[in-house]
Image (cartoon, rainbow, N blue to C red; front, side, top):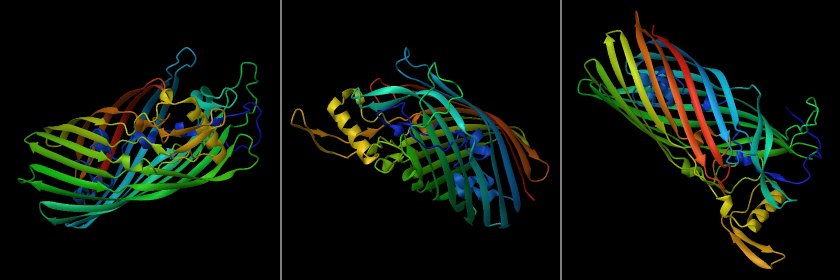
Length: 462
Protein backbone atom coordinates (compact mmCIF):
# COMPACT_ATOMS: atom_id res chain seq x y z
CA UNK A 1 0.00 0.00 0.00
CA UNK A 2 2.94 2.40 0.44
CA UNK A 3 3.26 4.80 -2.50
CA UNK A 4 4.63 8.23 -3.28
CA UNK A 5 4.79 10.58 -6.24
CA UNK A 6 2.83 13.33 -7.95
CA UNK A 7 -0.70 13.14 -9.30
CA UNK A 8 -2.24 15.63 -11.72
CA UNK A 9 -5.80 14.45 -11.26
CA UNK A 10 -6.58 16.88 -8.44
CA UNK A 11 -4.99 20.30 -8.95
CA UNK A 12 -6.18 21.92 -5.72
CA UNK A 13 -7.84 20.82 -2.53
CA UNK A 14 -7.44 20.01 1.13
CA UNK A 15 -8.71 16.55 2.06
CA UNK A 16 -10.76 16.77 5.24
CA UNK A 17 -9.39 13.37 6.18
CA UNK A 18 -10.23 13.68 9.88
CA UNK A 19 -13.76 12.78 8.80
CA UNK A 20 -12.51 9.25 8.16
CA UNK A 21 -12.28 7.09 11.27
CA UNK A 22 -10.32 4.40 9.47
CA UNK A 23 -13.04 2.02 8.22
CA UNK A 24 -11.29 -0.77 10.03
CA UNK A 25 -11.85 -4.49 10.33
CA UNK A 26 -14.28 -3.69 13.18
CA UNK A 27 -13.53 -6.72 15.35
CA UNK A 28 -11.86 -4.75 18.11
CA UNK A 29 -14.70 -2.23 18.30
CA UNK A 30 -17.67 -4.59 18.34
CA UNK A 31 -16.74 -7.89 19.95
CA UNK A 32 -16.40 -7.99 23.72
CA UNK A 33 -13.52 -10.13 25.03
CA UNK A 34 -14.77 -13.13 27.00
CA UNK A 35 -17.77 -15.38 26.52
CA UNK A 36 -19.72 -14.09 29.54
CA UNK A 37 -19.87 -10.41 28.45
CA UNK A 38 -20.64 -11.51 24.88
CA UNK A 39 -23.73 -13.37 26.03
CA UNK A 40 -24.49 -10.64 28.58
CA UNK A 41 -24.82 -7.96 25.85
CA UNK A 42 -21.73 -6.23 27.22
CA UNK A 43 -22.33 -6.76 30.94
CA UNK A 44 -19.30 -7.73 32.99
CA UNK A 45 -19.43 -6.08 36.40
CA UNK A 46 -20.76 -9.17 38.17
CA UNK A 47 -21.00 -11.94 35.55
CA UNK A 48 -17.47 -11.90 34.05
CA UNK A 49 -15.29 -14.80 35.11
CA UNK A 50 -11.75 -16.07 34.73
CA UNK A 51 -8.93 -14.13 33.11
CA UNK A 52 -11.16 -11.94 30.93
CA UNK A 53 -12.70 -10.37 34.05
CA UNK A 54 -9.63 -8.10 34.04
CA UNK A 55 -11.27 -6.08 31.24
CA UNK A 56 -14.46 -5.43 33.27
CA UNK A 57 -14.03 -6.03 37.00
CA UNK A 58 -10.88 -7.88 38.09
CA UNK A 59 -12.40 -8.72 41.48
CA UNK A 60 -14.40 -11.46 39.70
CA UNK A 61 -11.18 -13.40 39.09
CA UNK A 62 -11.42 -14.62 42.69
CA UNK A 63 -13.74 -17.45 41.55
CA UNK A 64 -11.01 -19.16 39.52
CA UNK A 65 -9.81 -22.69 40.17
CA UNK A 66 -6.22 -23.61 41.08
CA UNK A 67 -5.26 -23.42 37.39
CA UNK A 68 -7.96 -22.47 34.91
CA UNK A 69 -7.21 -21.97 31.19
CA UNK A 70 -9.90 -20.39 29.05
CA UNK A 71 -10.65 -19.84 25.36
CA UNK A 72 -13.59 -18.45 23.43
CA UNK A 73 -14.04 -18.30 19.67
CA UNK A 74 -16.53 -16.15 17.79
CA UNK A 75 -17.57 -15.60 14.20
CA UNK A 76 -19.05 -12.22 13.36
CA UNK A 77 -20.95 -11.04 10.29
CA UNK A 78 -20.82 -7.23 10.27
CA UNK A 79 -22.70 -4.95 7.86
CA UNK A 80 -21.97 -1.21 8.05
CA UNK A 81 -23.80 1.10 5.62
CA UNK A 82 -23.47 4.82 4.93
CA UNK A 83 -26.08 6.56 2.77
CA UNK A 84 -25.38 10.19 1.88
CA UNK A 85 -28.31 12.64 1.95
CA UNK A 86 -27.87 13.25 -1.80
CA UNK A 87 -29.10 9.85 -2.93
CA UNK A 88 -29.38 10.98 -6.56
CA UNK A 89 -25.64 11.63 -6.80
CA UNK A 90 -24.15 9.09 -4.39
CA UNK A 91 -24.97 5.42 -3.97
CA UNK A 92 -24.94 3.85 -0.48
CA UNK A 93 -21.60 2.50 0.73
CA UNK A 94 -21.87 -0.93 2.35
CA UNK A 95 -19.01 -2.63 4.14
CA UNK A 96 -19.66 -6.34 4.74
CA UNK A 97 -17.15 -8.08 7.01
CA UNK A 98 -17.05 -11.67 8.18
CA UNK A 99 -14.35 -12.20 10.76
CA UNK A 100 -13.33 -14.65 13.47
CA UNK A 101 -12.38 -13.42 16.94
CA UNK A 102 -10.48 -15.16 19.69
CA UNK A 103 -9.85 -14.60 23.40
CA UNK A 104 -7.46 -16.76 25.40
CA UNK A 105 -6.40 -16.59 29.02
CA UNK A 106 -5.46 -18.39 32.17
CA UNK A 107 -5.85 -17.82 35.90
CA UNK A 108 -4.03 -19.34 38.82
CA UNK A 109 -5.25 -19.45 42.41
CA UNK A 110 -2.31 -20.52 44.57
CA UNK A 111 -4.20 -19.85 47.81
CA UNK A 112 -7.91 -19.41 48.49
CA UNK A 113 -7.55 -15.68 49.11
CA UNK A 114 -5.58 -14.84 45.95
CA UNK A 115 -6.09 -15.31 42.21
CA UNK A 116 -3.86 -14.11 39.34
CA UNK A 117 -4.56 -14.10 35.63
CA UNK A 118 -3.64 -13.01 32.12
CA UNK A 119 -5.86 -12.63 29.02
CA UNK A 120 -5.04 -11.87 25.38
CA UNK A 121 -7.39 -10.50 22.74
CA UNK A 122 -6.33 -9.66 19.12
CA UNK A 123 -8.15 -6.57 17.75
CA UNK A 124 -7.09 -6.54 14.09
CA UNK A 125 -5.91 -9.03 11.52
CA UNK A 126 -3.70 -6.74 9.42
CA UNK A 127 -5.71 -7.57 6.31
CA UNK A 128 -6.14 -4.80 3.72
CA UNK A 129 -9.76 -3.68 3.33
CA UNK A 130 -10.93 -1.86 0.19
CA UNK A 131 -13.91 0.49 0.33
CA UNK A 132 -14.96 2.13 -2.92
CA UNK A 133 -16.77 5.38 -3.71
CA UNK A 134 -17.13 6.89 -0.22
CA UNK A 135 -18.60 10.45 -0.37
CA UNK A 136 -16.18 12.65 1.58
CA UNK A 137 -15.93 16.46 1.74
CA UNK A 138 -13.05 18.17 -0.08
CA UNK A 139 -12.26 21.86 -0.22
CA UNK A 140 -11.78 22.88 -3.86
CA UNK A 141 -9.98 26.17 -4.38
CA UNK A 142 -11.36 26.53 -7.90
CA UNK A 143 -14.98 26.46 -6.75
CA UNK A 144 -14.11 28.09 -3.42
CA UNK A 145 -16.35 25.59 -1.64
CA UNK A 146 -16.54 22.26 0.13
CA UNK A 147 -17.87 19.57 -2.19
CA UNK A 148 -18.56 15.92 -1.48
CA UNK A 149 -16.36 13.76 -3.70
CA UNK A 150 -16.27 10.00 -4.00
CA UNK A 151 -12.95 8.50 -2.87
CA UNK A 152 -11.68 4.94 -2.70
CA UNK A 153 -10.17 3.91 0.63
CA UNK A 154 -7.65 1.20 1.43
CA UNK A 155 -7.22 0.56 5.13
CA UNK A 156 -5.43 -1.90 7.37
CA UNK A 157 -5.41 -2.40 11.12
CA UNK A 158 -3.67 -4.74 13.52
CA UNK A 159 -3.42 -4.74 17.29
CA UNK A 160 -4.14 -6.49 20.55
CA UNK A 161 -5.23 -6.07 24.15
CA UNK A 162 -3.31 -7.81 26.91
CA UNK A 163 -4.79 -7.86 30.39
CA UNK A 164 -2.86 -8.82 33.52
CA UNK A 165 -4.42 -8.68 36.97
CA UNK A 166 -5.37 -10.31 40.21
CA UNK A 167 -8.02 -10.52 42.90
CA UNK A 168 -7.76 -10.78 46.68
CA UNK A 169 -10.50 -11.78 49.08
CA UNK A 170 -10.36 -9.50 52.10
CA UNK A 171 -13.10 -11.39 53.90
CA UNK A 172 -15.80 -13.82 52.84
CA UNK A 173 -18.22 -11.17 51.55
CA UNK A 174 -15.66 -8.86 49.92
CA UNK A 175 -13.08 -9.28 47.14
CA UNK A 176 -10.98 -6.57 45.51
CA UNK A 177 -9.05 -6.70 42.27
CA UNK A 178 -6.76 -4.69 40.05
CA UNK A 179 -5.21 -4.97 36.65
CA UNK A 180 -3.26 -3.46 33.78
CA UNK A 181 -4.58 -3.46 30.21
CA UNK A 182 -1.86 -3.05 27.58
CA UNK A 183 -3.15 -2.18 24.11
CA UNK A 184 -1.40 -1.83 20.77
CA UNK A 185 -2.76 -0.29 17.55
CA UNK A 186 -1.23 -0.07 14.07
CA UNK A 187 -3.13 1.57 11.22
CA UNK A 188 -2.60 2.39 7.58
CA UNK A 189 -4.86 4.26 5.18
CA UNK A 190 -4.63 5.23 1.50
CA UNK A 191 -7.16 7.46 -0.30
CA UNK A 192 -7.54 7.42 -4.08
CA UNK A 193 -9.72 9.09 -6.67
CA UNK A 194 -12.01 6.47 -8.27
CA UNK A 195 -11.23 5.32 -11.77
CA UNK A 196 -13.09 7.20 -14.48
CA UNK A 197 -15.31 5.54 -17.04
CA UNK A 198 -12.55 5.68 -19.66
CA UNK A 199 -9.72 4.61 -17.36
CA UNK A 200 -8.01 1.27 -17.67
CA UNK A 201 -8.87 -0.85 -14.59
CA UNK A 202 -5.19 -1.82 -14.41
CA UNK A 203 -4.14 1.82 -14.11
CA UNK A 204 -2.03 2.42 -11.02
CA UNK A 205 -3.45 5.44 -9.25
CA UNK A 206 -1.30 7.77 -7.21
CA UNK A 207 -2.77 8.35 -3.75
CA UNK A 208 -4.19 11.62 -2.51
CA UNK A 209 -2.99 10.53 0.91
CA UNK A 210 -0.92 7.61 2.17
CA UNK A 211 -0.31 7.32 5.91
CA UNK A 212 0.55 4.81 8.58
CA UNK A 213 0.72 5.29 12.35
CA UNK A 214 0.74 3.21 15.50
CA UNK A 215 1.60 2.98 19.15
CA UNK A 216 0.91 1.26 22.47
CA UNK A 217 -0.60 2.47 25.72
CA UNK A 218 -1.67 1.31 29.19
CA UNK A 219 -4.87 1.58 31.19
CA UNK A 220 -5.35 0.60 34.82
CA UNK A 221 -8.50 -0.90 36.27
CA UNK A 222 -9.67 -1.62 39.78
CA UNK A 223 -12.79 -3.31 41.12
CA UNK A 224 -14.60 -4.53 44.18
CA UNK A 225 -17.25 -7.20 44.64
CA UNK A 226 -19.36 -8.21 47.61
CA UNK A 227 -21.77 -11.10 48.12
CA UNK A 228 -24.55 -10.50 50.62
CA UNK A 229 -27.34 -12.53 52.25
CA UNK A 230 -25.61 -15.88 51.92
CA UNK A 231 -24.47 -15.00 48.37
CA UNK A 232 -28.02 -14.35 47.19
CA UNK A 233 -27.12 -10.80 46.16
CA UNK A 234 -23.87 -9.57 44.60
CA UNK A 235 -22.87 -5.95 44.09
CA UNK A 236 -19.83 -4.69 42.19
CA UNK A 237 -18.04 -1.44 41.37
CA UNK A 238 -15.13 -0.75 39.03
CA UNK A 239 -13.08 2.12 37.64
CA UNK A 240 -10.86 2.17 34.56
CA UNK A 241 -8.47 5.07 34.00
CA UNK A 242 -8.46 7.25 30.90
CA UNK A 243 -5.45 7.36 28.61
CA UNK A 244 -4.13 9.82 26.02
CA UNK A 245 -2.86 7.66 23.16
CA UNK A 246 0.13 9.09 21.27
CA UNK A 247 0.85 7.51 17.90
CA UNK A 248 3.75 8.16 15.54
CA UNK A 249 4.03 7.42 11.85
CA UNK A 250 4.56 8.97 8.46
CA UNK A 251 2.41 10.49 5.75
CA UNK A 252 2.62 11.53 2.09
CA UNK A 253 0.00 13.82 0.55
CA UNK A 254 -0.63 14.39 -3.11
CA UNK A 255 2.47 15.83 -4.74
CA UNK A 256 4.86 14.97 -1.90
CA UNK A 257 8.10 13.40 -3.05
CA UNK A 258 8.87 11.98 0.40
CA UNK A 259 7.05 10.86 3.50
CA UNK A 260 6.90 13.23 6.47
CA UNK A 261 6.65 12.31 10.13
CA UNK A 262 3.27 12.70 11.82
CA UNK A 263 1.97 12.47 15.38
CA UNK A 264 -1.60 11.44 16.07
CA UNK A 265 -3.31 11.63 19.45
CA UNK A 266 -6.21 9.41 20.43
CA UNK A 267 -8.22 9.08 23.60
CA UNK A 268 -9.74 6.24 25.60
CA UNK A 269 -12.16 7.44 28.28
CA UNK A 270 -12.24 6.71 31.96
CA UNK A 271 -15.04 4.25 32.75
CA UNK A 272 -17.08 3.95 35.94
CA UNK A 273 -19.00 0.69 36.33
CA UNK A 274 -21.58 -0.68 38.75
CA UNK A 275 -23.41 -3.98 38.80
CA UNK A 276 -26.09 -5.82 40.77
CA UNK A 277 -26.96 -9.51 40.57
CA UNK A 278 -29.32 -11.79 42.45
CA UNK A 279 -30.37 -15.43 42.44
CA UNK A 280 -33.76 -16.64 43.60
CA UNK A 281 -34.16 -20.39 43.27
CA UNK A 282 -33.84 -21.44 39.64
CA UNK A 283 -33.82 -17.82 38.41
CA UNK A 284 -31.11 -15.19 38.38
CA UNK A 285 -31.13 -11.57 37.26
CA UNK A 286 -28.41 -8.97 36.79
CA UNK A 287 -28.01 -5.38 35.64
CA UNK A 288 -24.90 -3.40 34.68
CA UNK A 289 -24.28 0.31 34.26
CA UNK A 290 -21.14 1.93 32.84
CA UNK A 291 -20.42 5.58 32.16
CA UNK A 292 -17.69 6.33 29.61
CA UNK A 293 -16.36 9.86 30.06
CA UNK A 294 -15.50 10.78 26.48
CA UNK A 295 -16.03 14.54 26.94
CA UNK A 296 -12.63 14.85 28.65
CA UNK A 297 -11.05 14.17 25.24
CA UNK A 298 -12.70 17.01 23.32
CA UNK A 299 -9.47 19.03 22.98
CA UNK A 300 -7.15 16.02 22.83
CA UNK A 301 -8.14 13.93 19.81
CA UNK A 302 -6.06 14.65 16.66
CA UNK A 303 -5.71 12.25 13.74
CA UNK A 304 -2.84 14.25 12.24
CA UNK A 305 -3.80 13.26 8.68
CA UNK A 306 -5.32 16.51 7.41
CA UNK A 307 -7.34 19.46 8.62
CA UNK A 308 -8.01 18.35 12.18
CA UNK A 309 -10.72 20.26 14.03
CA UNK A 310 -9.46 22.01 17.13
CA UNK A 311 -12.19 20.30 19.14
CA UNK A 312 -14.29 17.14 18.78
CA UNK A 313 -17.90 16.99 19.95
CA UNK A 314 -17.35 14.03 22.28
CA UNK A 315 -20.23 13.11 24.61
CA UNK A 316 -20.20 10.95 27.73
CA UNK A 317 -22.10 7.72 27.19
CA UNK A 318 -24.39 5.83 29.55
CA UNK A 319 -24.48 2.11 28.83
CA UNK A 320 -27.01 -0.20 30.47
CA UNK A 321 -27.11 -4.00 30.21
CA UNK A 322 -29.32 -6.53 31.92
CA UNK A 323 -30.18 -10.18 31.72
CA UNK A 324 -31.75 -13.27 33.25
CA UNK A 325 -30.50 -16.76 34.01
CA UNK A 326 -32.59 -19.90 34.30
CA UNK A 327 -31.26 -23.22 35.57
CA UNK A 328 -33.23 -25.95 33.81
CA UNK A 329 -31.15 -28.47 35.78
CA UNK A 330 -28.26 -28.16 38.25
CA UNK A 331 -25.70 -28.37 35.43
CA UNK A 332 -27.62 -26.67 32.64
CA UNK A 333 -28.44 -22.96 32.38
CA UNK A 334 -30.12 -20.73 29.79
CA UNK A 335 -29.45 -16.99 29.55
CA UNK A 336 -30.95 -13.96 27.80
CA UNK A 337 -29.66 -10.38 27.84
CA UNK A 338 -30.28 -6.89 26.50
CA UNK A 339 -27.90 -3.93 26.22
CA UNK A 340 -28.14 -0.28 25.21
CA UNK A 341 -24.89 1.54 24.33
CA UNK A 342 -24.88 5.26 23.54
CA UNK A 343 -23.14 7.26 20.80
CA UNK A 344 -19.94 9.02 21.90
CA UNK A 345 -20.03 12.11 19.65
CA UNK A 346 -22.43 14.88 18.61
CA UNK A 347 -22.87 16.56 15.24
CA UNK A 348 -20.15 19.20 15.67
CA UNK A 349 -20.14 22.43 13.67
CA UNK A 350 -23.08 22.82 11.30
CA UNK A 351 -21.51 23.53 7.91
CA UNK A 352 -24.79 24.81 6.50
CA UNK A 353 -24.81 27.68 8.98
CA UNK A 354 -21.18 28.69 8.43
CA UNK A 355 -20.29 31.75 6.38
CA UNK A 356 -18.50 30.94 3.13
CA UNK A 357 -15.60 33.24 4.00
CA UNK A 358 -15.09 31.45 7.30
CA UNK A 359 -14.94 28.06 5.62
CA UNK A 360 -12.51 29.42 3.04
CA UNK A 361 -10.31 30.92 5.73
CA UNK A 362 -10.21 27.68 7.67
CA UNK A 363 -9.41 25.57 4.62
CA UNK A 364 -6.61 27.89 3.48
CA UNK A 365 -5.20 28.03 7.01
CA UNK A 366 -5.31 24.22 7.22
CA UNK A 367 -3.43 23.91 3.92
CA UNK A 368 -0.72 26.32 5.06
CA UNK A 369 -0.25 24.62 8.41
CA UNK A 370 -0.55 21.10 7.07
CA UNK A 371 -3.46 20.28 9.32
CA UNK A 372 -4.51 22.17 12.42
CA UNK A 373 -6.96 25.06 12.34
CA UNK A 374 -6.73 28.04 14.69
CA UNK A 375 -8.86 27.61 17.81
CA UNK A 376 -10.45 31.03 17.63
CA UNK A 377 -9.34 34.26 16.01
CA UNK A 378 -9.93 37.15 13.68
CA UNK A 379 -9.21 37.01 9.94
CA UNK A 380 -9.04 39.94 7.54
CA UNK A 381 -11.06 39.69 4.33
CA UNK A 382 -8.92 41.51 1.73
CA UNK A 383 -11.85 42.39 -0.54
CA UNK A 384 -14.29 43.53 2.13
CA UNK A 385 -11.62 44.89 4.47
CA UNK A 386 -13.71 43.40 7.20
CA UNK A 387 -12.59 41.43 10.20
CA UNK A 388 -14.16 37.97 10.47
CA UNK A 389 -14.36 36.39 13.92
CA UNK A 390 -15.17 32.71 14.14
CA UNK A 391 -15.65 30.08 16.82
CA UNK A 392 -13.69 26.82 16.99
CA UNK A 393 -14.40 24.33 14.25
CA UNK A 394 -15.85 21.34 16.15
CA UNK A 395 -15.60 17.86 14.66
CA UNK A 396 -18.60 15.55 14.60
CA UNK A 397 -19.55 12.13 13.24
CA UNK A 398 -16.90 10.39 11.16
CA UNK A 399 -17.20 7.65 8.58
CA UNK A 400 -16.19 4.26 9.97
CA UNK A 401 -16.40 5.20 13.66
CA UNK A 402 -18.69 2.54 15.11
CA UNK A 403 -18.92 4.18 18.53
CA UNK A 404 -20.55 7.19 16.83
CA UNK A 405 -23.66 5.02 16.38
CA UNK A 406 -26.00 4.17 19.29
CA UNK A 407 -26.31 0.40 19.51
CA UNK A 408 -28.87 -2.05 20.87
CA UNK A 409 -27.71 -5.58 21.69
CA UNK A 410 -29.69 -8.79 22.18
CA UNK A 411 -28.00 -12.00 23.32
CA UNK A 412 -28.85 -15.49 24.45
CA UNK A 413 -26.94 -18.60 25.38
CA UNK A 414 -26.65 -22.00 27.01
CA UNK A 415 -24.15 -23.13 29.63
CA UNK A 416 -23.31 -26.67 30.67
CA UNK A 417 -21.06 -27.74 33.49
CA UNK A 418 -18.42 -30.26 32.48
CA UNK A 419 -17.68 -33.09 34.85
CA UNK A 420 -15.15 -31.79 37.31
CA UNK A 421 -14.48 -28.05 37.29
CA UNK A 422 -15.20 -26.95 33.74
CA UNK A 423 -17.94 -25.45 31.62
CA UNK A 424 -18.95 -25.04 27.99
CA UNK A 425 -20.95 -22.00 26.95
CA UNK A 426 -22.61 -21.39 23.56
CA UNK A 427 -24.60 -18.43 22.35
CA UNK A 428 -25.52 -15.78 19.82
CA UNK A 429 -25.56 -12.00 19.88
CA UNK A 430 -27.31 -9.54 17.60
CA UNK A 431 -26.37 -5.86 17.46
CA UNK A 432 -28.17 -3.17 15.54
CA UNK A 433 -27.85 0.58 15.40
CA UNK A 434 -28.58 3.55 13.19
CA UNK A 435 -28.05 7.30 13.18
CA UNK A 436 -29.14 10.19 10.95
CA UNK A 437 -26.72 13.11 10.52
CA UNK A 438 -28.78 16.08 9.24
CA UNK A 439 -28.12 17.70 5.89
CA UNK A 440 -25.51 20.42 6.25
CA UNK A 441 -23.73 18.67 9.12
CA UNK A 442 -20.36 17.01 8.75
CA UNK A 443 -20.53 13.58 7.08
CA UNK A 444 -24.27 14.04 6.56
CA UNK A 445 -26.44 11.01 5.89
CA UNK A 446 -27.74 7.78 7.39
CA UNK A 447 -25.45 5.32 9.17
CA UNK A 448 -26.59 1.81 10.01
CA UNK A 449 -24.95 -1.17 11.64
CA UNK A 450 -25.92 -4.83 11.98
CA UNK A 451 -23.85 -7.54 13.61
CA UNK A 452 -24.58 -11.24 14.08
CA UNK A 453 -22.16 -13.00 16.41
CA UNK A 454 -21.96 -16.73 17.15
CA UNK A 455 -19.69 -17.69 20.06
CA UNK A 456 -18.41 -20.67 22.00
CA UNK A 457 -16.37 -20.56 25.19
CA UNK A 458 -14.62 -23.26 27.16
CA UNK A 459 -13.03 -23.11 30.61
CA UNK A 460 -11.61 -25.90 32.73
CA UNK A 461 -10.08 -25.85 36.17
CA UNK A 462 -7.40 -28.19 37.47
